Length: 138
Image (tube, rainbow, N blue to C red; front, side, top):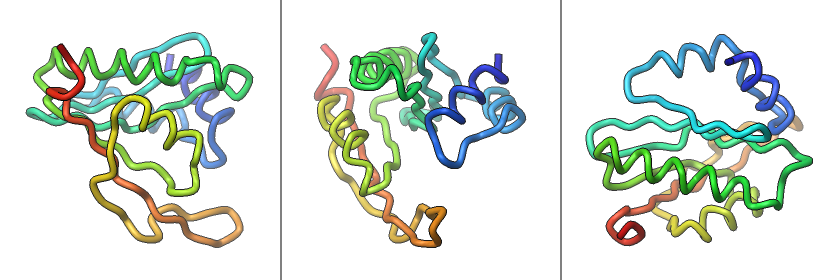
C-alpha cells in the first residue's frame, strides 16, 4: 500500500516522501489516510486537533474536485475521532492549494518564515492555516 502512495506522492511533489517514511507515519498513533485512485490525504489527530500532513493528487487528476473531496472526508473522519479543529502548512506561493483550502474554510493563523527549501536554493514561507469544525460542520 505505501509503495503506491509513495509513487503517487512522487508524481505530485518535487521532494516526495518515500514508502518507508509513509509506513512510519501510518504506524504512528492517530495517523490515517483517506485514499482515492488518483490521490490521498494523510492526517494526524491528537486530542482535539488534527493536522493535514500531506495531500497528494496526481497531476492529471487536478482541478477535478478530488482535493476538495479528500479534505472533506478527512475533516469528517477527524471530527469523528474527536478533533475540533484542523491545521496545515502550505507554501505561500502554492496558489492552487491555498485556493483549495480557502474553499474548504481554512483561514491563515500564522507563518513560518523560509520554511520550504526550493531546488534552486531559494526559500519560501509556509502559511499555517486553520479550520475550526464548529464553523463548518452541522
